[in-house]
Structure formats: C-alpha cells, structure tokens
Image (cartoon, rainbow, N blue to C red; front, side, top):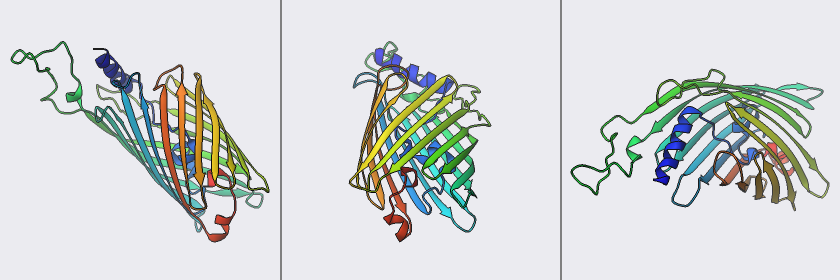
Length: 311
C-alpha cells in the first residue's frame, strides 16, 4: 500500500504543480538552460542528456528523462537556430511528458565583437500522457476473482493534454564571462490532466566564468538559480579541465544537495557523468546523468581551447 501512496502522490503533484525537466550539468544542455545559447559554438553542435532518479527504495517510484538539442550558427544573418526535444517517463509509462521546441537567437556585437548581446525567442509545444490503467489499489479486489485487482479506468480513454508554448531568453557574453536570463512558459499554457491547470512561469538566471592558462588548463565556475511556482532551485559548480582532455568537477545544490562530475573531452566531442545526492527537499535523493556533446567547427577554432559554453 505504501508503494501505491507514493505513486499517487507523485502523479497528483505532477498534475497540480508541474515542473520542467532540469539537467544536473547545464553546460551539457545549454539550449535547455537558455534559448540564447543557440549557435554559441560558432557552427554545429548536438547535445544529448540522459537522467535517471529514484524516490525511496528500489521497488518504489523512479523516473527517466532524456533531452536532445541540435543548434547551428548562420554567419550570414548572425543568428543561431536550435531544435530540441525533451521526454520524461515515470514508472514505465504511468506519466509521460514530451516537449518540442524550435529557437532563434540573434547576435549583436559591441566593442569589436568583444561583447555579444543575444536575445532569443522559442516556440514549442508539449504532450502529457497519463496511463491510468497502471494505477491499482490493493484493497480493491474483483468480485468474480479474488486474486485479480479491479482497475476502474481500464475502459476509459487515456488522459492526454497538448498545447503550444512560448519562451524567451537573453545572454550577454564578454570574453570568457557569460551572464544570462530566460523566461519559460510566459503564456502559461494549460497542462492539466484533471481540469484546467496553468503551467507556471519558470524564471532562470545564470552566470559562468572561465580561466584558461598557457598550460592548457581550464577552470570554469558557474552558478544558476530558477523559480517555478513554489519550486526553487539553485546550483553552484566548479570544474577543471586537465591535460586538455580530463574533466573533474564538484558542486552543491540548495536543500543540502551535493554533486560530482567527471568527463572526457576532445576537439570534436565531450562526454560527462554527473551524480547528485540530496538530503532534503522534493525530488529523488539520488540522481545520475550522462551527457554527450558533439561539436563541429573550422580547423582553426578546433585547435583553440575555448570556454565550456562554446563546446
């Protein structure tokens, strides 16, 4: 019965106070962090992220989320275009969310291109799907077969909700410093599975700074915060690139969350594994995330060691 209570509480809370997918390593999901990062590597980039988490014991609630974004910079128009897809799944199809977005970011330059100001707009849509046949109650036995569970929603349509969505972002870059903010769901689309329920605004702010030495060492310091409805999230992280390839990082979240990151990087791709442990707050106490980024730039740019936001 405890498992059922956990299951229902997660489903109901997801329907009433929906929150977006957020990834543990924002630098491996830049367009999801801020639409203005579209085209920020200078040519072509693809980023993929897989995240898993678990609520409680092994036989209780778990979830999986995956995101993929493709972005490209067009020199003729000084603009970046991105297409991204997000999917999350609770307990093998009980509750699923699919999100599709297309983004355009316009680049403006000041002081001989030392300063970049990049506003962006994002148009998308989402589909929410609840499979109510997966919800069972241990105290509801069939009057014809005492060994069978009664599932009262077996013959009803599976709930589904879809809607359009609009978001915007702004990014300012000065050399190796990035400062940005984004506002997601400013139209507050209806995403309720039981009646009308507006998807809350999500405001996100972030900043990062890199130090690159002559010995091919790179230090990156980043911070971000987000607020959506009653949910608040904050993160700070420090990473170092060693010997041009090895990545090591440590960080912390609000509500006593601790993070670790290891990765490997080449001129064409980077791969990162991030894990977090959270003592307090909503969400799973343990989460892990695998990120893969592929970037294609011209030969001269590939030889240069640049900020992680350009990978």
